[in-house]
Amino acid sequence: LLPNGAKVIGDVGTVLLTTKWLRAGIEPIAVLNEQDPFQQQFLPMLINTRISVYQNYEQVLNLE
Image (cartoon, rainbow, N blue to C red; front, top):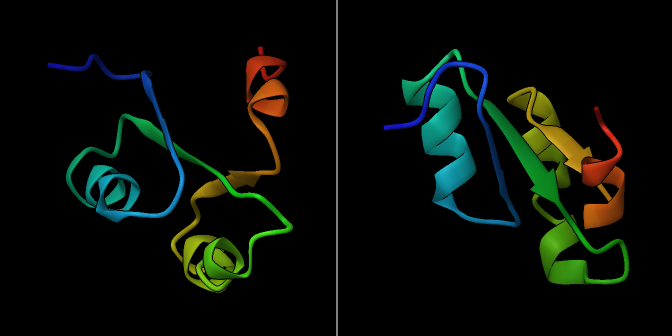
């Protein structure tokens, strides 16, 4: 249902990986709290899969 060029924003979970896998025309964006060790353990995987990672939602809002 999402058009090409859309952005999917989330934290840790399968949504971003599935988006990357199934829809090349949609940009998955991860927002991870740098103070949260649980979230930070996913950082290498997200970087490896070329998913953009930001520290907070304000950074994502300023992308355009």
